[in-house]
Image (cartoon, rainbow over all chains, first blue to last red; front, side):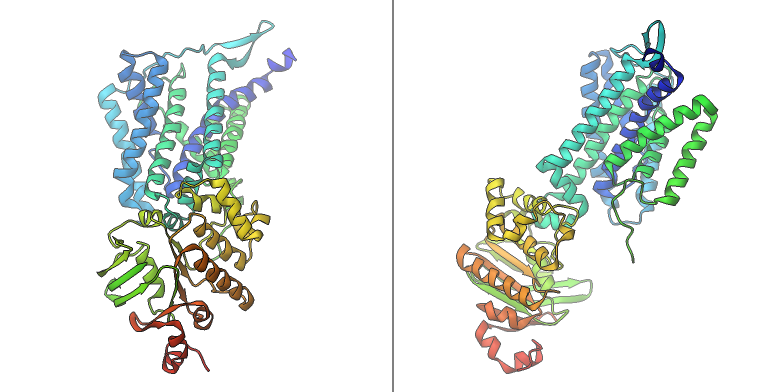
Length: 299
Length: 235
């Protein structure tokens, strides 16, 4: 058992899951926005990045880690809600390209503002968890206290979102507003509030993700910290299905594991190539996503 | 009671309703009849706030509805069952009903049981997705979803659309029963004039946005000109 756990294969799987849950979380936050408002949010990485700077760096002078995490998530909620109200609401019913342009622009602005205030030098976030791998029988295996923290947090967030959507009245209204806005309004559901709430939740999930990503000892927090992660999260969401929270999470984890093996056995430069290859093949085979339940509509 | 006065509604330059006035009394069924494009659906959409009128007023008891949001009108107890039934196909029967009960702040479990008792077919299918139901079952589901919040006004848009005559008759009978037992104000929009007139107390006939008749249902039903020219009923 020990020999297996410290083997190359097991360490690739563990490392892949650790990265994969992050891709899954980014994908989940994209899905939350897509399902509520039908918009692909290209600032889905930058908005949480901003919340992380405010919560973890600006408030980091005054408070400890956990209080800063709570502040960052609350700031994330505010950024999400404010963005929907101010930037996104005028775009409903406009051509699909409009929100894409606006959100790419917003991404650029956020990264520039963060760099102007905090500079683009990486900031390290102190975490209460060690990034040093556990040892078994004198050999390291690819799991540290920090990666466990990352995996457990991701699972808790995913389960919380699933419970909210599946089992609560609020979740029922969120889903109804996304599927049938007019019918929902006729039943007294405050659809506009539900759309704002979709963005709020999504940015909250994103902020938790950004805190985990920038807590990574090697990268730290920079204005561009989410750019690469966003690309993999986007691929996971497209492969799993933009309307399928479970699909996007599963796709995130599977892609994380595959890419870990590619990086280890092939070449780390091949990672992004393989990721794009997975995207293209899955879009050709199942354009709506592997796990999507939406049937292609005949016109 | 719903009172509509001088209502004019336009889509751009095209007027869908011109100076429409009528009253729909409590515990009575008011049928709104007319051909395609007469403005029947527009009338219901304006009452429930989905469309803003150019002029005129709509009052429910003493409350003016035209300036209110759709959500608030629904929360006042004005239930609109839209054309094409509007059940959410991706939801189960029970989720559709729960959604209807949300804003009424009632005991959800009890209200669900009441609807299952009233419409046993829904109880049998409570775990099924609504898109697996037949047309008639969907119509029943959307009515049950509107009724679960104990509305005071029920706006029904073409409940017989696409249904077999026997099912239409059942649904009309259900509407009649509900109106008699629940102090409900019903506005029933129908192209199927004969089945609507059979249960209605009062009838309003629209023709390209204008009211051409506004009278007791039996009088409208026997008016040869109305039957022939506006209601497509051959005697």
